Length: 229
Image (cartoon, rainbow, N blue to C red; front, side, top):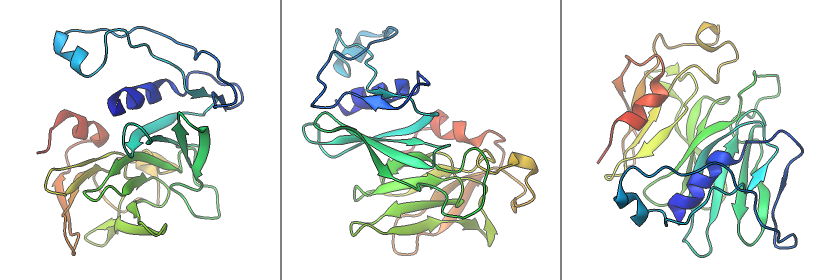
């Protein structure tokens, strides 16, 4: 079920009219689109054969980072709208709602077209972890509601704009750091690093940051290509 709702988040940005969504007070059949191609029968164990792609909500600028929080019965879906600097929530009980704003940029001046949080994941304790473009950091939402910075620099130089992340089985967090969140991207004068790397935040009290590679100019794809533990 969590896989299914995360898959549905991929279609959240299919329309450009004002934001709306199904809520308990407006129970109407959800609009469906496209088809699901199945290349191996094992896929049916993850997604029932009669499943359809349903549009939960639309009217966003563009969305990323689908993440299921909680259990299958009472949980909720989180996703980011990067240009709006916002994280939205959807549940079958309450429909769509604003979860966090600002999500990735807390400054007071203009910071380009992609200032908000991008990728979302959970740490080993189930806390929400955010890759923040504008504030150029990886942060975690603590149980008491405040944010704590996990990484914002490598050897004293500020990160570019953390994009995507994944949790390893031992609690380490891997994340990518391309230039897409910088207002002028790779040519931005605020850029301090001479590379776009993939990094590891070690699990534990120190939370040390280690660079895994500096070879990927589009490093956000590296997370998807490699499996970690």
